[in-house]
Image: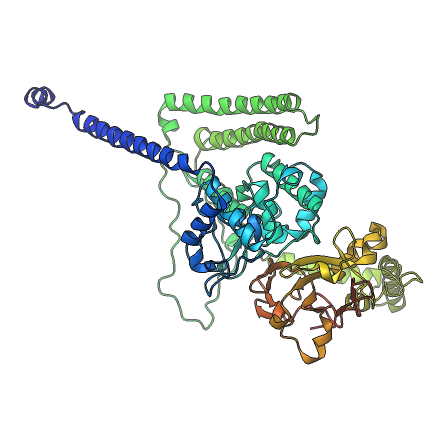
Length: 264
Length: 358
């Protein structure tokens, strides 16, 4: 009775509010998507090919505050002489540079520049300061002796980056990042340039062939699922222990309570 | 339901003595069993039939689980050695066996809880102390046995038996001692653990080489900020049976290059490094984990096991954590061909404390 009365007197359907909100969300969302697509298209067009001169401008606008107008370095940032295009491609291409704040750890952030912009800055730094060029070809193909690469990885890398390449803690809040999902050319660059607190593994320590094998092992790890079921972050006894304490012992407690409780 | 309590005066044992303690005026009273509450399966025949159905369904489910585990063994074979095949094989066989065992357990518990008779029953535990007559009989039995065997009287027999028993253990002691390592011409110190723990295979003039290839390292190859994982050059040729792992576990070294002005060396160790290149034992002085987490900007070495930190720029001094001593330093120099060589063995035992080193 009450429902019928309400329907006659009310002019709006009970779904009106929900429908109105839905329409509003669709309109604003659609408009935003369209606008950002248009902006993205507008951004992409002029960066198709950038010269060293463009790289210089980008560097002076975005990097010179800390690294100096001529790569000479300041109190806030190191000189970039000798780091080469490889270091620029690694630091900027993985979103580490520009830094949010100075410190020994450079966290990975969303990449701030497009690929051509990064390459232009890399060309500029390479031209002025020299250093290793961006790795290409067979060494970063991800193919090689996986078993030998994994042995070299365990000896040289695993103590910081974890034997499953899942990353690990260092001192005072610093950490070695996870290597899963990192592009081969960036792994190669990290070994050659020793970014932040990572030691340098020059070609005289690990030959390019050694590096190729290590990358092959890492690519194999990225492509192959864990044989042992859930990895729980591959962090070893901490996450596994936490899981079994909460869910394993929790299940035992629940079963014990059920066994000793009186039936209804 | 009647509570079946059977307790005679004897079964309660002797009354506890209050001794000199304060007499408790209001000791905790045994509250007894709560009043009996009939279950739904006792009162409602429909519920009872349902419970019966649940239990045998669980047992049939268990049979299905067992059959599934057998089927999974055939359906997901590990034939081509693919890792994913092992994973599927383990997963599906495990699910089948887990279902088979869990369903039996849950069914049995549900059966006993919901269907079996549930009247409460008390079975009092017999007292720990025996009756006086039992205790006296036991003493009597020992006295009689002593009397009849003459164990206490014929001391020659008794003592020679004790001597024979002690002597029978002696061959075991000798045999087990033979299982321990012993000195031999090839391994002159094998039977002396203190000697083994105090020395490594490093010797004057031995080249520092890369782990695991054994390729020797030139000083010019160690660039600033580098960290090399080092073994003695001859180690790479040792086979497993020649003690490769035993020697490696003691001799592993981390080689790092700092700017010479960053190194704060003690006077007597000034010539232990070469152009800012220093070599330290990789075995933690706490409990022996490999310390190799080197931060090239702070020059700190971190042990991943218990977070001991060592400052490489100051003789690997302990700056944090449970390690008791700095990491032992390997004195190094270069030979005529520019290769890095050791100047001697470590001057102190590497690794954690042991009974003659604190």
